[in-house]
Length: 294
Image (tube, rainbow, N blue to C red; front, side, top):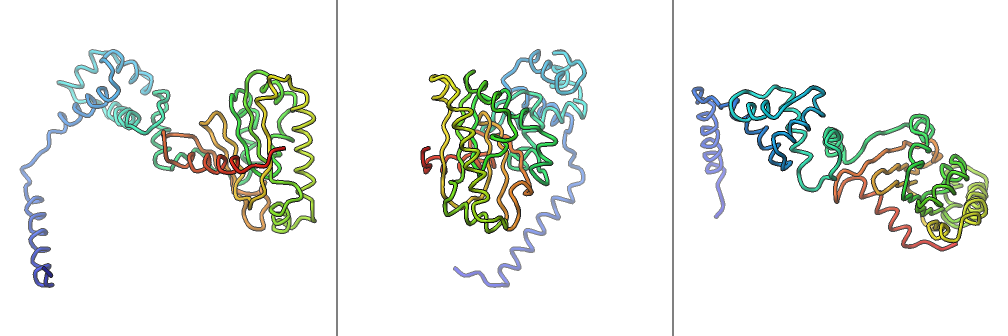
């Protein structure tokens, strides 16, 4: 059945009338105290905690002591303070399915991650990023490192070879993927950045030699199994560094702009699936699956 314009207009007027009638119910007053008490109780139940445990959690987040008696009062007779309600909302969001379970004090950063797709920070260039977060802070305690890009200078030039060997000997796994020297894709990137032919190829070849001769060849046989490096020959779009499957540093390769001058994104995994972290992880995984062994 086709609705006539007149029929639709009448329906719209009816809906508008219903809305107006609801707004005119000025005698309706929600029980805000009961709502606030219910919000606090729901947050505690979402965490599956006793009042004592929940009080400890609130104390950590608020920075002032909370006891079980106060929690019981806020859930039954008293109105919870505003900062307690904010903490309860953070806790509720953190407890929702799909988020990575972390430290209770990290609830706020998880919500920020929700709103900005896991994005923790944006830096104008790679040098700006490294000035605020040295590569040593990212790698020194890492158990698993995955990297793909062009020459991977941050790994081969910036980070100590001795420290890299020490990490691998102590159990760290490193998978590194370089853009193939003297290949088609690196030649295209040289033209795009305005370099002489084979400029980036020579740099990448040197970094590969460093990884082979100064790192891999000096490892024990057992540790050598934890280091894998390879090349790929595909259009380069991102430089990606993933640490312990939790933190990602990603940088796009833009037209006519050197990689070192491109914006740099710091991403932290917030969800079991989805989010910006998963996108960059998929980039590395896809390229690694198509790698050419060295």
